[in-house]
Each structure stands twice: as structure tokens, then as C-alpha cells.
Length: 184
Image 1 (cartoon, rainbow, N blue to C red):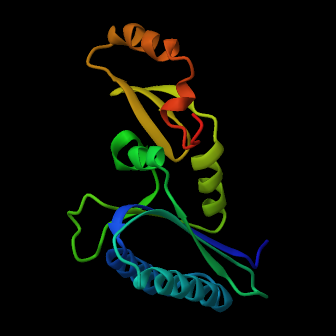
Image 2 (image 1 turned 30 degrees about the vertical axis):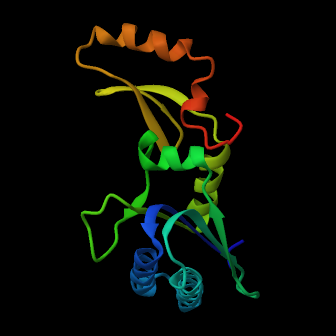
């Protein structure tokens, strides 16, 4: 709905203190969002997200999901990543989207993906249930969805294409390479 707001964050192991700082930075950047009512919704979303994670310790391997309507109160949900999902997030897959690093340490290996509005729901659906495809790029053969991809075979020469595709197609189910499903 036009009055709803959805915010989705995926943390790759950033500690909760750094994650709170990232959320505060996003909150400050939201001052330029559309109408006054929209800015208020973003302000409330980021305030509640920051409040939820600011008192926590350890590394955040999780999704942070916030949903609210113009009329009602919003709620924050923390969804811990499974062991398989952690492996994909920490190097098994490349994730596409707005990656934000901790403001105090921009060279950190940990990051947080941020999705807002319709992109948040699209990203959730894509990360959890999208059917991947196999595609060729200049640098290799990938199995991918809209927001995640995994390199299956790197290419050095044009004649490598045929030899590279054969092992990918022989995998019983190429979708298991990037699947967030715990049953894959």
C-alpha cells in the first residue's frame, strides 16, 4: 500500500554496535526522502531498528525487518541466519544491492545490505524463494537470482565456455548453489 513502509537489512556479521551506527547514518540520510509523512515513517523505522540492536552484544548474522503503516505502529523483527545462510553471506555468494560498511571502519569485511519500500519485499522474496538461472559473463559462469549470485566457473578464454557449462549443468540442481532454503 502507498502508506506502508518496509525496511529490510541483511547483516553479514557486523557487530551490533556497528550495526546501530549504520542505522543511525541511514536515519540521517533519510531526511531527504519524499514527503514529510514519508520522512516521518523512515525516521520512526530507523529509530526503532537502532533501539532494537543498540543494547545487543556480539556479531549480527541476521535479517532486520521493519514493517509499518501510516495508521499503525511498526514492529521490528530479527531473523537469525541459519548455518547455511551464514556460509552464503560470508563468501559463498555475492550479494547485490546497497552495501553499507561500518562508519568507523570502512575497510571492514562485514557489511549490511539495505532495502526500502517495494525493494524490501522484492529482496526478501528473491533471497528466500527465487528460482535461480545460469548465465554467462565475461569473467565466468554464474548461478544467480536478482540479488545474489555465485561464480561456478571462471573463464580465461572463449573456448572455455563449452567446457565450463558442462559441470554446471551436471549438478543435480544448480539452484542449490545459491539457495537460502535450509532444505536445499
